[in-house]
Image (cartoon, rainbow, N blue to C red; front, side):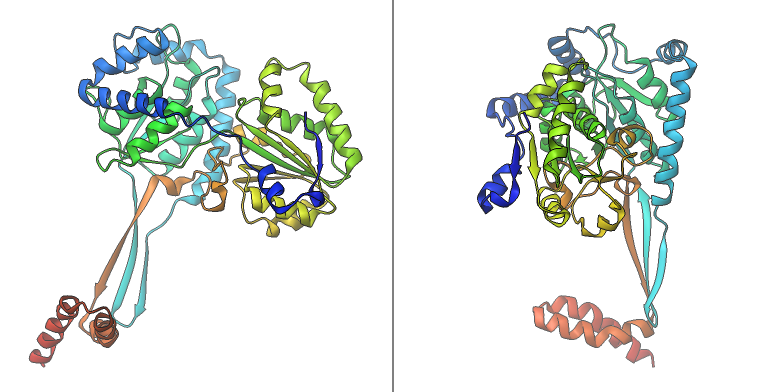
Length: 436
């Protein structure tokens, strides 16, 4: 478990192999099953959603939508301490995301030419909140609050029902707090299909957000490739963390951070990059000690099989590894971590210093926990208000403005050989000349 590896002793190919993500189970059979589910939901609507919920989850639903009495019951079941925690986290997330709201702009690029950028919310968004072994209340907030700030008119939330045929009460309370009115008891690929294409009960959306298992992930990919389906937020993969540590780091803190990400699932990955061999031994011992008290001990042990402990000579080598790997979560447990921020080109979210665990970002610091995995941090950002909006460009050109750029347009259209494009300008210039 977490065998120490000297980075400088590895060849280029060995380094690349060491930073590979765990192999995913890309099963053609699973893909075919997901496509069959999507096709069935498209054909049969609500009936297919209920039948698939009974088939996969063993739950017989009389209706898919969450009724008012279910919301009332949920409020009664949640104690005040939980409500206060949800509200506190919501305030933190809202405070961080509010400045992301883009404003309209107007600029005169040259005399008589006015170009504008108009920001519009995506009209219909679907928010998927996994159920699984734990109700992801935090995900409701991470999706619902940016959608609310963006002022998306229709916000649809789907989440798998519990064995009693209802959603977890904390999920419902969080959804209400985010102002989500359309809530449905549906999970898996069938939920993605229902939101992408619409059913008798569940409205069609334009874009789908939220994490999920391989079935959900594949369904999001399929519907995003269909022009009549719905766009997806970002490619989703197993959770991952990279910790950079020097001799000043607290081994107990690092062990806890590695274990916290490892408990997401056996396909998750944790990587420790350390400048101090003795510290790495202490961290391994701390992991073994803390592991014995965790309820998900066996799952975490499986995760650690996908993980690495890399020893480097200096922090600059560590920064090179960061940019090669492009981690979802990056923790800098080093002296003066802010000095190294400018060296980091690729990371989903960065946690500076000993008092910044990834758990804080997962729940209540304010940043969004929907982040790029699988190395997509090289070209994608974490979820923000901007993902719930789109930009429409506007231009208004006066006669003088058109005259100012006419020669430029004429030369470029000549190079490209697009005579009709040029004629659209020339016909206006002729009109201007005739009027003079």
